[in-house]
Length: 421
Image (tube, rainbow, N blue to C red; front, side, top):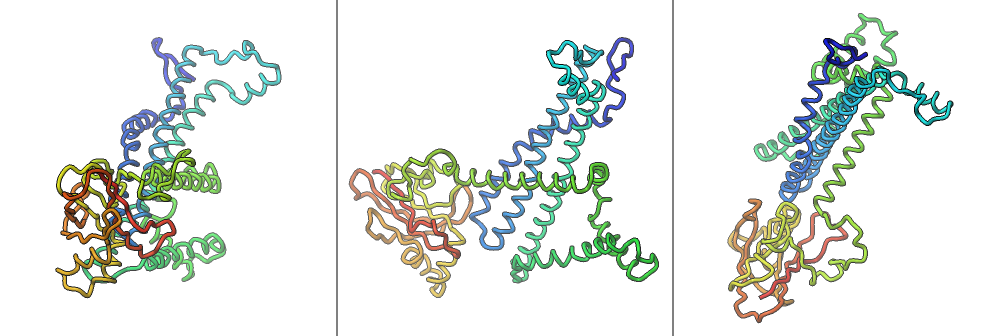
């Protein structure tokens, strides 16, 4: 109950002793956690155009794990603050009305009154439930996020190791290698675990098989497997039931992962979401589409690696055409069409066979120089196209898109960039 010392109300006797630290951590960390998902989105959007194939898959996996952990922590801290606020409100109201709820003054029938009063119990019980619920939400969110953070660190270390092997040694590890290596590492633990569950009671303690199984379990416990490395999860599982705990954790992980994937799609293409069914589709009339990604003064460099010019209105004598290097398009096409040529001839070959350019529907021969996207520091090829003789009005640059290594059905044949003189 709430006691009084010199007229000052005291917290309930069974209050969770960590409530002040919980509030401090949630209050401080919630702002960082709410910003972290956007930072991760920007990081993946920055790195996606730089990597392809297995690197893209591994980077995507790390992003999903990290984003899921950030979302879980953000939701945990916000929800925990709300639950703690509710608990504080109950404690404060009980100090004002120490007799508790006066059910006789509520406009309820006798049966509803009986059901409601039994369900709520006394105010001490209701306050304890609110206190315990806040602590359990805090603990469960931190436990699940910690597991994902651990997976993220392991996955990131695997990528770094694989990258080092390819860059320094010339060994190109396939993503299937990593999957098989992971299975090879974890299978001994699962075998020992299930043998112990099924036959452990009947196995002689001094038998060789028992000593081998215990050695395997002890080794994996030292490197992070097992319940002893996560006491909060062990407490929750032992008192709430392992099945209930696992189902709850899988539900949280699934919801966080789905949210991470959907939020990435929204960040990558915001216009794809909304009630725009009747709006004209730019894929049907690509030459009439004014995509901000094609103009340097309007584009978001993190969300697009499309070719671009300086502005929709060109006032100078030259259009500066910048084509950011696309590893999944330009690399295979240049290797296939131009790799046999000397280095000084490959740029001309690129203009002729990899990225042919048209101006108002007519083929032109731009001279490409090696440059970079100034706002993302990604490699790019740059051509200065003379437009001094063009008449005033609307014109269209067309930049052919080489096919991807794995062609998609929605890949357009070219980027069209309207501009005005």
